[in-house]
Length: 246
Image 1 (cartoon, rainbow, N blue to C red):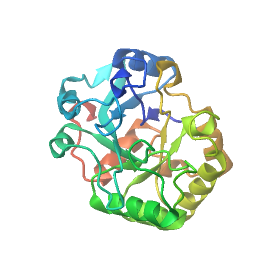
Image 2 (image 1 turned 90 degrees about the vertical axis):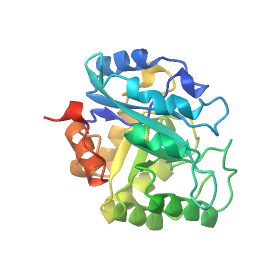
Image 3 (image 1 turned 60 degrees about the horizontal axis):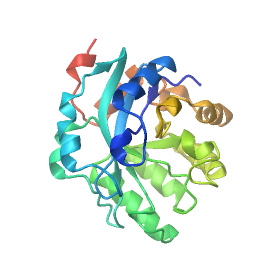
Image 4 (image 1 turned 45 degrees about the vertical axis):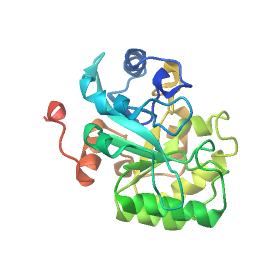
């Protein structure tokens, strides 16, 4: 499936990534992307930047190297209550918020606790997507979460890094199962390279193959085109981005 938007990318500001924003934009152009989100880790992750980093993303140009750039964050799910570590003042400066489990922040527990945390963060209205849910360390009720995400217009991410045999070993079968459940309930899928080095940004061979395998409708893949992605943001009630208006 064609994917023209990468909604999960990191720069060296995350503390364990190795490229600059300019280098990421250059790679995005080289790999045929039309748009990407820059989503460094928020403050609870070891090595992550202070919240001022996210508040100051307003200085980032909307177009770099001919590619549209959205200002975002990968925030950490902190507890069963669905709290995240993003400072309240940061939201107004961000276009895109992913929430993810990370072992360094939320110690893996049990299926009930993980499910409760995901349902609560969806219902909070504070996030646009849930990141790399295939991680086998965080089992959860796929159907409950997919249904809740559909109801609240929260996208479920398919993470290319989880599928290529590197990060979060054992995710492949779970990602396929999650994708099938999201398809069955009519939810939305987003795609992220989770690039921690610019060469990986916009590479979606594994994700694209999985989307084709499960026959995911392209109108439910918000990264299929930039227009679909912007329409999803509008569905979530986000204000239009002036620079991207036709």
